[in-house]
Length: 456
Image (cartoon, helix red, strand yellow):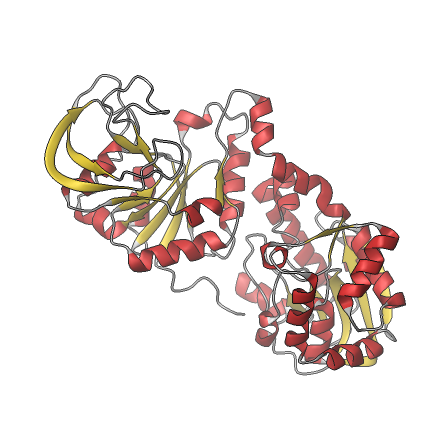
């Protein structure tokens, strides 16, 4: 099996911020959502604790230089978050980077104009562990309404990320000042400045790739913040992936050296076809499509009946006008036109003729279709699995979707995943596997028997 997530110079932590989470009716659900969204391209350990310092102290036990600290309710919406963090690490020298809050002058966040210094919003921050250790593990610094502190005066950047209380950076000075710190994280800022290190606000690109669910006593406000997640839960089973949001690079890690006898696949765009094309197939090869989206299965049938293997964008336009189904995609597909995506697909195959020739053979194969949520009724698929040699099953990220996770929670999805594997194993332990586990980690590379042996 391919080893993933190696050589990262950071570890991720999640802490239960009790000063906020007392207002959240289901803290565990939000913690699991935070962990779920963290698993976009991050497969390393996740530290859990009850404070920023506890997370960082545990992070020191890992052989990494940085720690991404998240509060319960923080959501990484795009895998690009990690790419931006990695680029930031490469070019900046810092102790802490995060969401700087200004309570040192009159502004929207400090209407009374109190001298309350600066702080860091606890939703998310990036900490250099080498400096954390070198500075003797300084306390994060809880806000206080009464206690005065001696701190380094900051040279505040004149520009803000948004509003008038989020400066781009705080640079060190040689002056000291006295204040009553009115915002958490003041001591991290003070320690950074006294060690001549600038404190930076998160870059806009990092901010754009994440979200924070601000706790509230109002159920209506929480529902509004989670509206986009609820929309996915409700509408995902009615949508069709007209293009694959994941590439085909994983196929090179599968050591199957014979043509495929039987393919079991979710009903998503051209990946099933590329699997067949990559490994080869027989004239009597069978394909079993399964999906929780009825429209996706219907679209597979429609393609088989009406598409000739050429000019896929024109076929999509015709199909949408005739049957009016909902299409969906991801970051990888939303920014490209259909013509761009078709050219990208042709590039994967080598030429449009290769696709057409494949399609002519593919249309002659035996196809069957199963409407099922494999987290609910996996036996609808697994009961169809035979002991044929050189069989392949692909389930994509079915166990790491918002729909699966939000409804069932992390432990619930883990249980579903294990049931799925056990049922397949009872039918054909030599089947070749492609997909993601419940933490979004790719598990391709060998047979189910080999995977279970490593997993144990």
